[in-house]
Every structure is written in structure tokens, then in C-alpha cells.
Amino acid sequence: MKVLLVAGLGPEYPNHSLLAGSTFEALADPGRFRHRTGEISQLTSLHAETNGAHLPLIRARQGNSGIRAVSSVRLQHVEKDDEAATAPHLTTFTVRSILETAGVDHDHFPAEGVWSGSLNEPAGPYDVVLLSTTFIWDRATIAKAITWVEERFPEAALVLGGQYSNLKFQQIMDAHPFVRYVVRGDAEPALAPLLDALRHRETVADIPNLVRRDPDTGRIRLTGIQYADLEALPSPAPAGRFPVIPYESMRGCPFTCKYCSFPAASPKWRYKSARKIADDFARYRDEHGAQYIKALDSTFTVPPTRLRSLLPLLTKTGVAWEAYTRANSISDQSVVDALGEAHCRALAIGFESMNDTTLTYMNKKVKARANRTAFELLSRSPIHYFTSFIVGYPGESPALFEDTKNFLVDEYEGTFALYVFMLNDETMPVWQDAERFDLRVFDADSDCEHWAHTGMDSATARRLQLETLRDVRWKNDRAIQRTWQRDYELPLLPHRSVAENAVVEKLVDRLGMASADFPDRAVAADRRAALLGQLADHGVTSPDASS
Image 1 (spheres, rainbow, N blue to C red):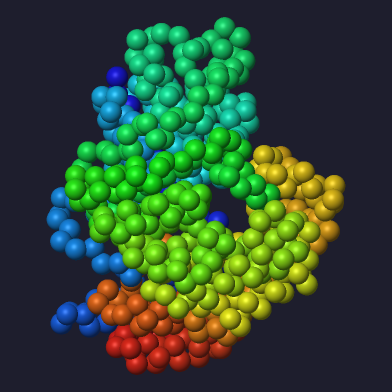
Image 2 (cartoon, rainbow, N blue to C red):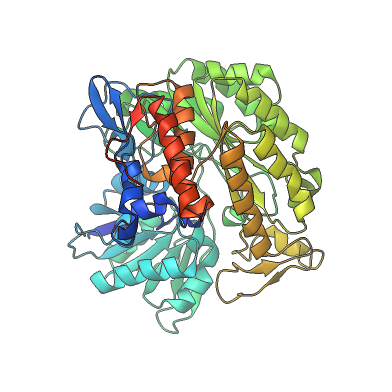
């Protein structure tokens, strides 16, 4: 049996639309924006002298289907054969490990090739195609991916898995008869037995975690749920050397934030012990050349008892790592010091709001004061941090959002993202408050992009998002919105300090967004000229630029 795994990033990211009208948008599709060639060249011709050579400042990211270490971490002695920056995302890493352990002959095709029309498509034939939906979040994207598989491999059995199909399996199976199976929940108990049954043409009725079509009636059938024992199972480790490795120490989530459907996808919260995590990090270091581990759990720093046991163990491994946390886990200087000693290099935190009323509506179980404490502690530390915020959560009014906006414009320092509230999942607990907040959607047959509630509507939320980001961009020299950076190599100046890289990245952000922020072309050109002068002060020049 020959299997094809299609897994990787989606066609875009939630805030991708914020690049509309910018030079970054034009740079991504120069053929469509030929009239802006001079403006594009201002970015593409930026160079800095590095080790005696002129290094382009804007460099397309290598290994787009992979993960990478935070930009302040320098990997050492990476051999050419190491997979380095192209170590796969967690889903790919885990599924590949399951397939290799089961001895399944398979190929991996990055999902990015589906969206971009890669010329290096897999030739097949394949008996089974596995399609990950982890980075898919709307009907149009899933339809494109399914059509791509059906057109190329019409005889293959298509099996879906991942967050989107886990939650939307009924909708998907109804709309796409070509989909044969959906693995819901954990893949470990289901995937290898399913492939074995297909190989031997045996029944799949007793395999757990499956959504299938009844061969006689065509009706959708669900088998029972079985959870993987994360402590007992060996952690994923596909063959090869990976200086950067993705990791999960838990599944499910102990929290019940009302904007999140993650617990619905994996209702049972399970987590590995501190000893197992430390042993995994050491094994990845010794057997796979890991220098950096990217923990992708919903909250790596809970439970607190595990964290207290874990940090001294990780101190001994010598492997740098990053993780997601909650603000109230970063409660005092001793925690930050312990994280640093344990080689933590970066943390991602969902602040969501700086208003206690909005946080209460979200059932976040964190107050704005805890957000501020975490920010103040981390901003004084060498640990890189990234925070995210939401505008438009049901019940939030423009007046309530003002606290978040003022914090970002006047106080925040570091990298961040601001998202418009997304209402595209019927399993989100916020629906319990539909009557309370008069929650209405105007495209219920689509992906619920247009909505309204007692506080505001989606159009207002998008306006507030754009206004806030514009103000932060031009009024706050210390805060950097992360959007366009995903497509390019970071740090921009590999041999300069973290502080100087932050300054240069901020200037490039302003340079690339000037056309979107200032519709008057003359004003935008003047802004870009001034920014080029400031970049020159840092040894970054654009000799071929024109406006």
C-alpha cells in the first residue's frame, strides 16, 4: 500500500488581509502590481553589510512548511543534511512518526503546494491520501484541498484528520462524497489500524475515532472515542536530524475560554509528566540533533505543580525552548528567573483584552492586572514574548475596547497581533451567550464572517482593528505587529543585536505599510523617503530604490 500525506500550512493566515494596499501585498504578487515596481524595489533592494558581504534585508523564508526557532536564537553547526529550518509542523511530525512506526510506505507533500500550484507534485499512484486540516478554517479552503486530491488521485481513499475536520466532519462528509473517512480525536489509536484494514480489505467498524460512510446505506457512522495515553506512548520522532523540533506535552485544555473550541476537539485533558518531558528533550538532543524545541500545547506552563518540577530538569538538558503560557503563570520575578535558567527563550501569551469586563465575558479567568504584570516582568527579561489580542468579542463595545487600544498604543513593547473576533464554529462556548448578547450572524451558511451583537458588529471591529494597528505603527516605536514577517527570514540582520533588529524591523514594517496607511501617494512617498534615511543610519541602504 502506498500512502500520501498532505500536511502543512493553510493558504493564508487570519490577519493576512491586513496587508491589503501595502508594499508587502505587492511584493507577494509583483505581476499583479506592475505599476508599483519602484515601490517594491525599495524593499527588495534593501541590503546591509554583514561579514564583508551585502545581505538582502528581505529574504523569502526557506522551508515554508516547517517551523523555526525564535529569531533571537542562533542555531549552531547545522549540517547540510539536517532538516534545520524545514522541520515539519507538529501535525506532520506526529503523523509521520505514526506512519514510520507502523512501517507504512508513504510520501509527504507540503500543503503549501496545493495552494501555490507547485510544479513538483507527487506522481502517485496512491492507495490512500491523508489530508491534514489543522491549518484550514473555512469551507472554501477545505473544498479546494479535497478537489485537488480528487482530481489527481480519484481512485485513492481520502482520509481527513486535524482540528477543522474534527469539528466539522458532518458538514464535510455531507458536502464532499469523495471523503471516505475522517479521523476525529487522537490519530494514534485509529490511523495505523485503519490503513491495515484498508490494505487487507477488512471491516473498519471496530476501529475507534472514525467517521465513515456505511457501505450499504451511505449514511454517516461514528465509531467510539479512544484517547491516546500520552505518558505511555513514545513521543513522536520521525527518522532524521531536526535542529528545531515541535512538541506537545498535553492534549485538551483545562480552561473554558468561551471564544475557543479547542476543548470540544479534545474534551479530555491529558498531560505528560515532568520527567517524560525532560527525557524527551534529552532524547531529541542526543538522537536528532535538537537545539531548540517548540512546545505547541495550549498552555505548557500548567499545571503549576508540573512546571515547578519540570524547570529544574530542563535546566540540565541544555536545549532552548519556547511555549504557550497564560499571563497569570508569569506572576513574579522568581518564575521568570526559573524559566530563563531552564533555557526558555520565548513565550506566547493570549492577553485577549486589557479590560476586566471583556475578560469576564470571555471566561478567561485572568484579569487585566495579571496581563500587565506578565508584560512588565517579561519586558525586563531576555525572554522573547509575543502577545495576542481580540477586538469584537460578544458584549465588547468600542468603549470597552479602548483600554486595549490605549495599552497597545501608549504602553506596549514587543511583538503582538490583534485579531478580529472569529465566529466560525458552532462548538464555541460563546453560543451559550447568544441571547444575552443578541448575537446574530448574517452568513450562517458560510463561515460567519459577518456578525453583530450588543457591543458592535463585525464591520466596526474591523475598523477598530485597522485604526488601532495604524496608531500603534506610527505612534509607538517599541511595538511591532507580526503579519508579513511569516513569509520572510528573521532576524532581518542575523549578526546584529536583538535590540537593533527590533528597531530595523519596525522601520521596515512602517516602510512596507506606508502605502496602505497613507492613501495620498505623495504623503506615502515622503514617509518612505524618511524611513529609508532612518534605515541608512543602521547601515541598511537601498541604492536602487525609487518612489
